[in-house]
Image (cartoon, rainbow, N blue to C red):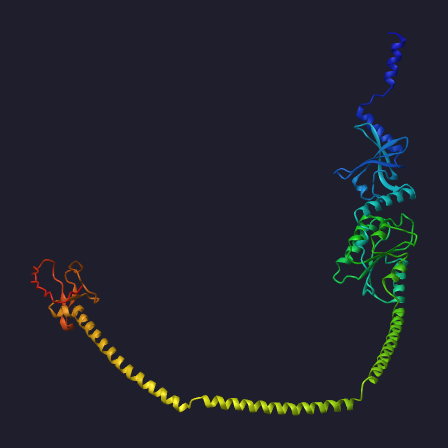
Amino acid sequence: MSDLDNSVKEVKGNVPEFSVTELALSLKQTLEQNYSRVRVRGELSRVSIPGSGHMYSSLKDNDALIDAVCWKGNLSKLSVKPEEGLEVICTGRISSYPKSSKYQLVIESMELAGEGALLKMLEERRKKLAAEGLFDEKRKKVLPFLPEVIGVVTSPTGAVIRDILHRLEDRFPRHVLVWPVLVQGEGAAGQIAAAIKGFEALETRPDVLIVARGGGSLEDLMAFNEEIVVRAASDCSIPIISAVGHETDTTLIDYAADLRAPTPTGAAEMAVPVRANLLAQIAEDEGRLVSSMSRLLSEHRHRLEAQAKGLGDPARLLEIKMQSLDHLSDKITSVFRQYILEKKSGVGEMGARLRHPQDRIEEAKRSLGSWVERMKILGTKLMEKKETELKNLASMLDVLSFESILERGFVVVHGADNNLITEATKTQAGQQVQLQFKQNKRVDATVGKSGSAPVKKKKVKKVNPDQNSLF
């Protein structure tokens, strides 16, 4: 064996041998030890959040790109909502994904890279919400002139609530309900949105809401730029005054609110009028009203006096009317008398043409006597006709009656229930029956055995042809 072959064997023996998995895990451990905490600035790209809830993305700048992942538990805690194209500063650790031999940044926290990026994100969010109509003027509600109850959404410990209460006390004291919330930091946006919805759900709802906090940096005011707060303010049926920050500060809730105040103190001034000014205005209006009414009454009095001068003396006008009334009264009396005389004359003429009632009565008596005689004659004839018809019907009844048949020797058989028995087949030996003879005389009898005695045929009499038929 040559010296070269021995050298190769020595080299191979000094280089450690790894499996693919061992090498990948070793590299992963090395990266995590050397880059256990790094801050990386870049632009978010290819943001994806699948059903698992984890976020997969990339950070890039002009010359490089690094994969990034944010596990579900950390994603919900981020202060910035990851969006495509957003420039951020991510804090985390460098690790690798062994199955694809790629290193990646595991994000633990995220913040916007500078105020310019934050303003860009807010502008894009504002355009998005404006496109949905959340900032339309037609959604704006008019504030009540003098609310009975005012709701305030703010921190209970800051100077904001003291300024609002003090200003309300100076202008026009009102009943105030305070809903304490966080005004910055994690969870602040959710508390503010819940407070707005909570006021709306109260049985005794405020007449107006003030959402307020003091001044601060753009990051401090971020809670009032969150979509959840903007949507809650836009959907609220109670008029809202937005008073966030100073006059130069602008947040997205300002666009959704019904009115924006430059400061929390300004919001209190917008909510209620000045009580002293109202009293002064009422006094001024009262004086103007009294003055106007006095002037109006004076004008009408002068006008009435001027018109009264054009009228004559009422006493003389009354004398003329009284004299005219007397003439009319005399004329009416004369006309009425003439009318009565004419009617009396007419009644006399009509009375002369009338017949005396006694004459009419005598004439009626003679007519009635004539009718009585005629009715007697007609009544006698009618009675005779009806008597003849009745006799004929009585004769026919005698002929058709079964009793006349019994007079000729026939018998009627009755059963125990007094029903007629008309056929021999409806009887049985030993049955009790009654035999009815003429003059309605009855005899009890018992039916003998069938065929025990021959029945003699009765000699049928010849019927007189002149006798009426029974049928």
